[in-house]
Image 1 (tube, rainbow, N blue to C red):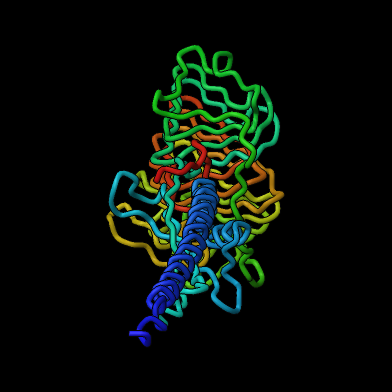
Image 2: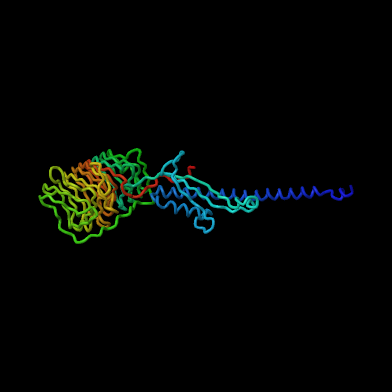
Length: 429
């Protein structure tokens, strides 16, 4: 019995040791769990900021830049994708389900492996835990299909029943003047958006006498980012030859194959009742004009599918009263629903009047052209009017656009003229 009395209290020591280890385990779990919760909150903050930044790029038309921006913003919030050890991962996706679906929204997921302090002692598989968080942001953007680059004065002048439709896209005026856009005399402008650099433009004093803007068109004034689409490169060409047209004889013009380039001093199509066939390919007009006349039997040209015209010097495009022109840019749909031959980097563009060439480009009254492709004349005025009923599909870049006399024009987004943010991006989920 004395022996047993000498061993009294040992259980207390064992229990105390056990309780100490148990308390240490709870403390370890509390420390690691607290760290992981903190990292989770940081990941959520990084995902929120990165989603808003990426959405801002999308609605501004910089859709190729959103990953770079998201990575940079995540890094500012402690999640660096460039670390050599345990780098963060920033993943972008377009939501395909839920209340916020489509290209106007960006979902960003931010994740990073986090080393634990004590959990590894209890379970080696818990030595590293992945912390992740997601956020979705979005805003509304409108693609620009009519970009008017004149910095002052009236860049869009519509009168006498003219009609301009920006189909699924918008119009942007870079003018800072109070009369940047004028729509009068029963003319109508419709589309998704109208943006002006001018913050003083007043539609009450500039849209009157029966002129109107469609009620669904969102007007954004005082925009910071004016439209400035990237111009195509200059074609490489050899010596220029004389105009093959300008007579009553029919002729075939253009390179011998769709990938070829030919340079004319000028090119007159459909003069004096002639019937001209335009081969596919790249046309450089060096000094004279690209001039379409009435042609033969109500047709100015045959062919004209898969063409690109580059206008140098003071050259410009003139489509006469009564002309019936059929032109389709490379890769676009022809009037018979076929696909035109491709012309490489110039696909989707019909005419490019070189930057610095300010000669007025004109589509005269009564023409009934089918033109499927963009018109680029960043330094030049474009006039369109006097009863022209042309079907025109493609973007427009010009210094100014004047429409009158019942002329009708439809612009679409076949090429990239930029984008206008019509609502600010914000977190939605």
